[in-house]
Image (cartoon, rainbow, N blue to C red; front, side, top):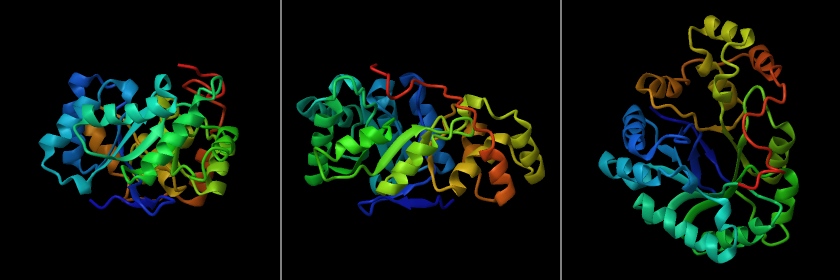
Length: 274
């Protein structure tokens, strides 16, 4: 299965649909990622705070898939928001994953009360300049945080991974990303299931003979976002990848757009300190 890619602002190609492992225990992660790789996923998203980088690494090592066919992302946690700490954090993630480099490394949260993300960004920019990582970016950054990055480095983040789903479309941040040439990546793309019973979604699903989750993922993809749905159920892992055989109409896209209700499921980036 050929998964579409998006071109990051440094020219790197990133699969538009990947596999997330948030809240998957390390002991279960290897099996889940192995199932995803067998299904055809080639992009895996983890983070230091998830505690399952080692499980991801085991699945990659056991897969037999060539490293250059995979796109691996991890994230720097709040306790490492400083220049030297960020450098050490990157090396620690590599060691846990058993990899020599990451394709994408993100600052997980800005935690703006300390401004430590600015020094961390200088470190990530240096990693990119040294060719030690494919691309660098951020997660959960608001437009004002993106503006401040420009005061410490000319490097523009390749990706901003934010909570984004029909109930919380984060339009201001998505627009700020686009204006800067930053790809928007959606975490919790299915709102943890909160929108899957909405009639606007189920009616579209019935019309196309697909699941509600497939409708929402297709909505994301047609609007150019990268998505990383998570599941540990083999059937759902496969179904979440099977979203390229149908297309939503402009009216159907608008119907899903209409579900915005400020339905945030995670912390607000302006307040979160870990």
